[in-house]
Image 1 (cartoon, one colour):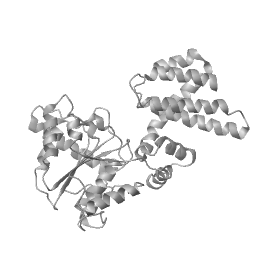
Image 2 (cartoon, one colour):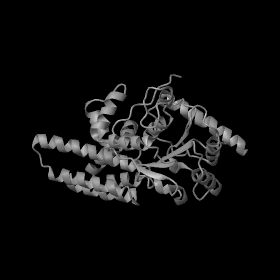
Image 3 (cartoon, one colour):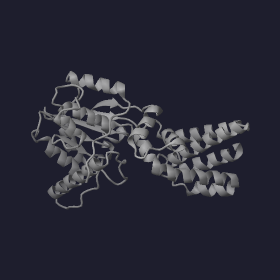
Length: 354
């Protein structure tokens, strides 16, 4: 299997400057939490911090040239431990569960070495109790190569340390309360409130924001082979909303969302009997997932229609109002909204406006 290095960081210049200052002055916390929307680069930034902490050139930004820096980029450094959500171990014995978790994590890292442009975790994977016990064991081990060891726990909201497993929570809390001096832990999450307050209180938070459209576009043009072009490129940039990860995921999601958006518009043209069936077919529990992607694709189609009508000298008011309604529904979808009801109301508005 061909190994590949991590892609460069695009954007986040101000954050990198602050992080470099914290590393140079030895002020980077032992237990940190990187918080931000999905796909904005939280884990990649955490790996950059790990590279700086393990760099052989001294404290500060990573030199990028020493053996340790290259090992981190290749995900081969013995003192870097990257925990990602995995399927729950099936073994019955706790020790065998830990061994199975270690094997599954090894397979996940091999996959990321072969393709650093990894996808977001599937719905059923998690950080199980076995993973936390494995982390505990590795925390207690002396660094193999340098003076520090770094633990990165990606998508920490997938930890099974909620109300179902107090033992797991206690195990993680013990690590966070008394980390060895040679240990740094960085957790990342898009949903910090999914973590127990007792865990959040022991982490120093850092907010990771979105990047500009030009940064997303540059990444897609330089890092994908073949790169998207023309309308396909601009559609992915628009759907990304400042998230490079989302731009990468949007290819498959965009195809499905585009089909759903086209089906809705077709149903709107046919009238209430048609669009009501489409609304009822919408799954009621995916307001923050498939439903949002469909609304994004719908917005793209309405913007394209606006351009065509403007070039033809047609009436724009109804289309502008329709686009505004889609964007309002998109914002509502991030809260406690019923997707079926929201889609029915939106379809009725679109029928009136288009």
